[in-house]
Image 1 (cartoon, rainbow, N blue to C red):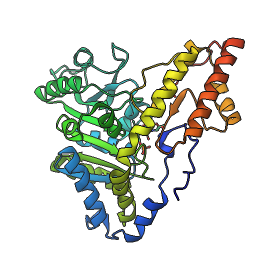
Image 2 (tube, rainbow, N blue to C red):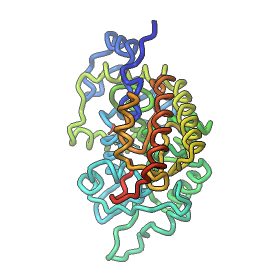
Image 3 (cartoon, rainbow, N blue to C red):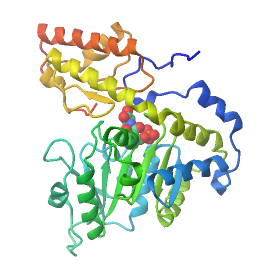
Image 4 (tube, rainbow, N blue to C red):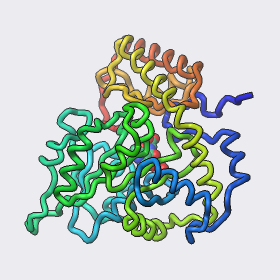
Length: 358
Ligand SMILES: Cc1ncc(COP(=O)(O)O)c(C=O)c1O
Ligand SMILES: C[C@@H](O)[C@H](N)C(=O)O
């Protein structure tokens, strides 16, 4: 009989997805080679699996998306002065502990999309730093896009425009694809179509896909060779990675088809919030709902408390859905929204704190 996942009522993040008993059982059959010596069969198989999906030459299993992103960008760079251009909300800038400054010694050009949703080629052209010999500047060497970003699917046609321009200007283009699986499911664009537009992609197995750990970085043979060096330098070498990689392969094989469930939960809750009169920050494309606490007159502190009352785990105005949530939990989230709306009616909150992303 299927057991209810321990995180059935978890909406703080999709990083809280947990391995199923079936996934854990596969570990017993895992290979046990030393993956630092590239001798672990399950790790090599997982890397091949992701390369085949994305159409890239080589893959590198990493313990985290942060490591995968940071060594990818570092591997595109040579020597400073150089800069990386990304959306101001990008995880590589906001949530990776200034790795771009330390590991890459890079300046970061953060861009607020003119359309409020995703970067366009015009945004990039307006803000990139040309390599024109001006000794005052740090030329843009990498453009990093995130797909999905806060659950938003990046339009493929815009990625094509930015990719074509980057390649014409000898600028590397990286994708933080922690949730590119969700972008593919929501848009119908294949991972191979995304893959050909990026010089490197970091794909997380440990978020919406439900593996307990790990990401795979894909790119050219030469890029991955350099990235593997930076992986080892930063303590990312894994000895018997087989058990971990096997769970990653299991997640890829068995959970990709379940992502739509989370997307449907999020769409339902987003619609419900708006029907109540609450305001969303951004549209719901995949597995995230972002309330706008200021326009909804909600104190973010209420959210955690009201969540506890209804036995759902909430951290802020970002609601993250996964295929491991239950119908009961989603209904409880809707009850939370009803209470928040009532509170906002009774004592509308005016923000006095600085803006946080979630
Ligand atoms: C968009 C995005 N990229 C990268 C990461 C980093 O992944 P990890 O937590 O495994 O370092 C996360 C969060 O987990 C993320 O949300
Ligand atoms: C906080 C951040 O690192 C994580 N990826 C999340 O989305 O919850």
